[in-house]
Amino acid sequence: MPSTTALPGYSSEGPRGKRTNVVELVGPASYAAGGQALNASQFGQGGFDYVECGGLSYSSTYYGRVQYRAVDAAPSALKGAVALVHVIWYTRATDVEVVATTDLSGEILRVFMVLV
Image 1 (tube, rainbow, N blue to C red):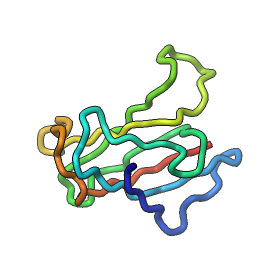
Image 2 (spheres, rainbow, N blue to C red):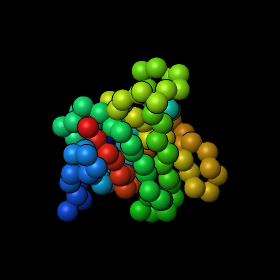
Image 3 (cartoon, one colour):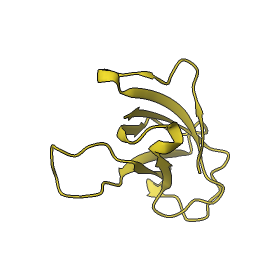
């Protein structure tokens, strides 16, 4: 399970009663190809409406992109929240996904999320 720390002043009510949060996501000790899993249940919620990694890691060496893991990949305006997303870590210098087993435990990304 990823290590996350909610930042002071966050975990507030967002639009239409949805919960917004900003957390510090600590990278895994051994990165798995395909990304670092984030489950909405880690935050006491049933799903994510939106998740974004804003900017570079604190060391400026890496950045993250969010990959949604929808149950059904077909486009639809009727899709609800997703329970699971993956944060894919990239090396800033090459714009290539981090190699599997890379130790990212000293790296932190800020993540914004809207939960339901």
